[in-house]
Length: 169
Image (cartoon, rainbow, N blue to C red; front, side, top):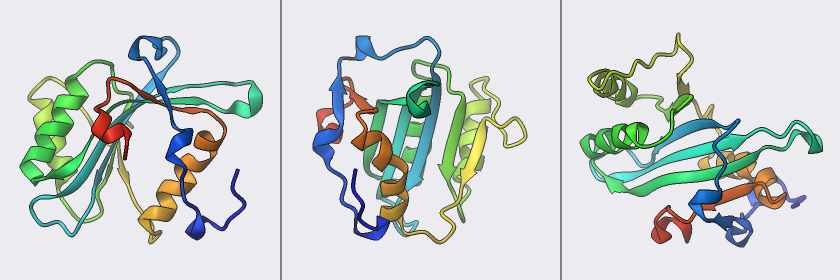
């Protein structure tokens, strides 16, 4: 779609396809949650929490359809973030895997404890919890490289159930 080097890419939000939630597939999908605490770790930093369904497509170059079905992105405290993550995890679909960008904090420990109190067991050993490492890559480059291909190839959708404030970001 864009031959520019990753550091110079700009994502075109107009390519993100809105879809009525009833048309988001359930059968054959895997559901993932991604947690990204942005900022310097101080209270009230921006957090992004997403729930994404992936419908594998083994034909057509193995391009999977990706559906953003739930999202929160705003400045909140660490305690509010834990509550938001747990609420989203418990809401709706079975979550196959929870990925938390968590190099230095204890967020994953608090999330695991809170979900255990609700009868859910997450761990790296069970492979349903993944600690995501940025490995020194800049955030903009990580985001662009992860969604550029599905976005530019009409494989990235966002449910109209997601708040319009987030759909427009």
